[in-house]
Image (cartoon, rainbow over all chains, first blue to last red; front, side):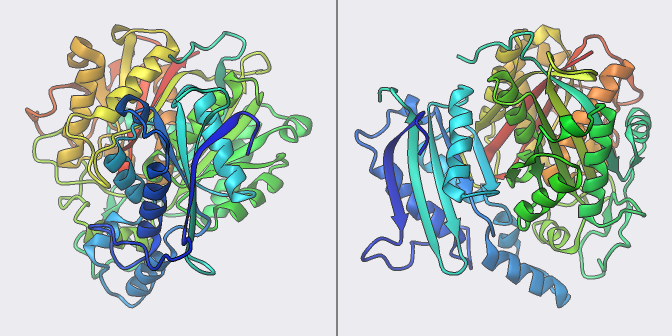
Length: 167
Length: 363
């Protein structure tokens, strides 16, 4: 965590007792989108107190993933290599933005939506982007979500604001 | 409230390089964009026999993406007049589809003698424009004096198949943004790089990134908000940052993909953000000639916008067959128009409701 940011809530998936994350309507086949949605919901739900609508509207989402939706990408690549036609739903989940849009719509987050592939330590990358957006006054809070499907499904989320910011 | 940019920390584009299906180099882009000469043709790069649509804008002699990006980064640095010492003090921001973005960015930075890769953006069709906004932010905040932003997408089988399967591709071989009878988008190649520097250290100056906005619709995983809520907010933020009003905008390089629903949403966003000026500001989408370059689209379109402003003529919105009542805009159709202002907006939007607006001021 940078000295300029303060954590408002944190979450992971899985946490003790977790099974597979709940499915996300319209986003199929892969665990990528369910992982993002589940850990984001858990993190945002842990914010105390819950964000007022105008505060939510000033919240960004930063998705950090090295491999992206690897399950879907591999399925599409294999289908295309075999001369087949991917199912149309794979078009809609071909970029990490889609599940970010699911999260922002559900929680009313109208700040920037940014997806990055980490060049260094993933959380540090995500927090650096969050800090830049906050310092630019593009948002007041940022939800940073880390998600990977390799070597196994895992996701983590942290909701941050600038140090000294009141809620 | 976003602060305006101080003169000395203004972010200026000092070097640029660009390749698309329109050709190699800035002159090729400008000539085709002004003439409205579209580059769409049947795809021969890979097998499209099983696809519903078989057209795209591909550069016949395109090399591998990594090699094309390396050439672009080097050419942009040379255009900016960066010597070895300046390059060694400069980081790279890269916009590409996804894996292996970090490895590619590191290799590109090393190959060009840059200090390293700062960030890799995978935010779909706003990847490159977000990178430019972030670069300008770093400079405004004094956290960097210089950043290279590069972006690349070369039409390939997997994304082509996905867009085809999603019925997003135009069925009549043309992209017709804002037009009656539009049927969708067509994909296109683009590789571009720009050097963005603080004005106080810059030697050259193609244009200033005078304002920027990045927002989200908070509406739907893949559909834009019907009233263009996020894009309107991004435009408003860019104007606020630039300290100008809607009447001072002389051109809008629209995101418009030629898709029925999203072009209407963008027109609504322009009306919401610009008010009465939305009916009179000249608008075109140069996707109508170079196609949709996905992660690279924002940088290609920014470069085209800069080139057009500096040339003093505004690009044509090719493929236009007639007005659409849902897009009541002043679309540039028959011929390029003279630029009436040094300010222009370059707009981009993506799945997930991600929106960006870049405000450009030509030097």
